[in-house]
Length: 327
Ligand SMILES: [Zn+2]
Image (cartoon, rainbow, N blue to C red; front, side):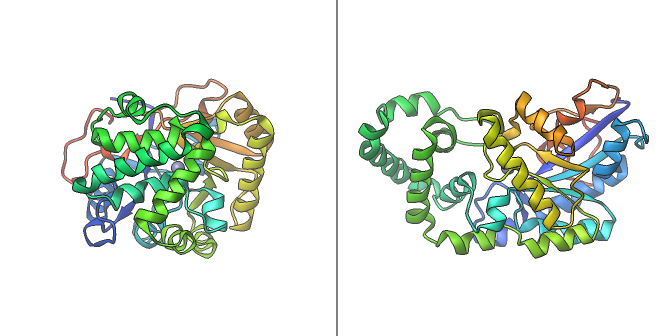
């Protein structure tokens, strides 16, 4: 099935979780990554970003069952764990780095929340919720906040990966509250619960410029994941332009091709302004978080800027597994 389909897989943390400092992080165990690669080797053909761009512009045809591997957020795992494995197998990975995290030693809010949660075992969750409740009290007047129960009722809905408490914390601090307040609360909770200086934590969490340059030198693809990891579609055009220019400078600095670059939209979010800016600035391919395989027969103008991806969890992590519905 799925003739003329392109499978793009999205990865985040890939590490030896069990022996790491934060075994509670939601990531892929190294051994399972290797198993998944063996599974993919049996049933698919690995392709490069450049091959995909050429396929959409009609300059090239992709092999049967093409698959592209993508890695978001520039975690150091991508250099220390993923890169040596891909290099050994002769596979190109596409890596998407939020510029600010790499160049300014900041920790993205989304990552602060991951590590606040990873530092909170289930029996300590009530304490974290109490902490959040009292922070809402402190900032209620200034930010016109509703009461804790209102937010909890609205946001605390379990999904297939997380408990309702975890979902509540993520949604409150990632989406619900005013952006400025989200930053303030993430900072306070990170400082109190993770309790490691942000600058040191950032250096441990993300790749360095030198590591990224080394990967580019070895044939890996580096693309844009914005500067501040914002929802691009929610920004005015001038701010989007800033995000995109910063990305281009970054790609240039690590040795990438600024006339044939790609973007992975943070949170999969973009709008018409984003697409216009990308086309003006030499971007040739865009990755979303829509869960699907891409249809190579779709020749609509912007199809290559709206490519869907599967999560690593959608693909078997067993070399001998039979193919699944996405094949
Ligand atoms: Zn991201």
